[in-house]
Length: 188
Image 1 (cartoon, one colour):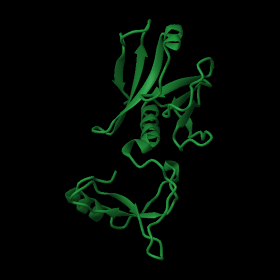
Image 2 (cartoon, rainbow, N blue to C red; image 1 turned 135 degrees about the vertical axis):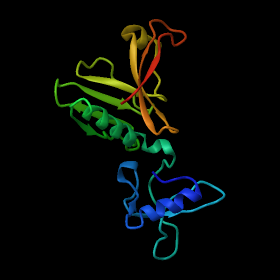
Image 3 (tube, rainbow, N blue to C red; image 1 turned 135 degrees about the horizontal axis):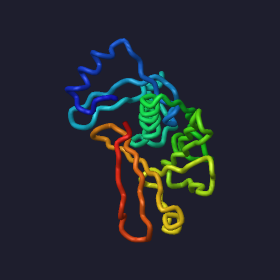
């Protein structure tokens, strides 16, 4: 991860002087090579090289904040968690019409024939009646009270930028009202 502070960026550049960085296609980017931009008055970041004619490069990537890579952090955390348990799964970033890459992450377990569908975009309504695929909701994805009453729980995932770790949760709420019984556990 690129450091945000100028003093840390210098060390990052020395450590990665022979590495190249590219605008990620899995982030909705264009796939061209990037450079690092050093600032002392704002956050350091990756940037596109100017086009050969000197004009700024035009990239189709819409989201540029830290959360735009949540699907990649989630996949990495899930891979590590499964490997620690001797399990394996197939991962797919399912693309819905007009929505950014990473809105959905499908995780199909090799054993048991079960799967998770992680919803990180509230524009995609979860399917609750599937016997094989269990929905997991990002924090911005709403769940209606009728679903909570019928199911008694939902699985949620949230991200902690300070610790750079994905966290998973099971929320229990037997009736509409405060989140009684909710709890968070670290995905390790």
